[in-house]
Image (cartoon, rainbow, N blue to C red; front, side):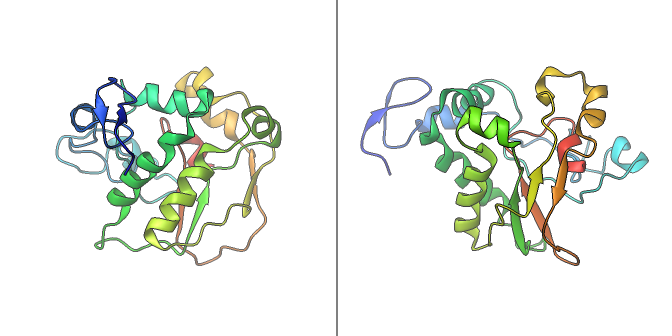
Length: 197
């Protein structure tokens, strides 16, 4: 709990980083969605895209849709260094991921940043989120198991169709994870191209 302070979103007095009214207005992912890629579907069935071409991952756990004001929170974190937001967002993800009907992962791996991007930004948001989620769920985080070996343009700057090509051979894995159930934590998932690679 934080002492009473201004809500990060609306400025009203709050015991948390953002107030309960703003929390209720966040774009929680409540509509039926594909269990593989989290895109909306009519009744929560696997979407046509995932049926047509099965991604390299089995399941996506997402808390929010990437729309206002969540997009502004992520941008404040990534580009405004508002790291005070990490714990609340990570706690929401841990709560959503703590589903006893699914196999718990053996390890969590944060989506790696290229060293040049890490120097520029000063931190890896995915690693900060993964660290908190791992602590909450009691799952070890392997921060150095995978590396970003190509400094690619940001996915957000590319058209949807270009994103898979942009990610080709962008990562390497230095750990043997054969037979392990891995959760990869990323701050934003749009096309799933980074995760798929």
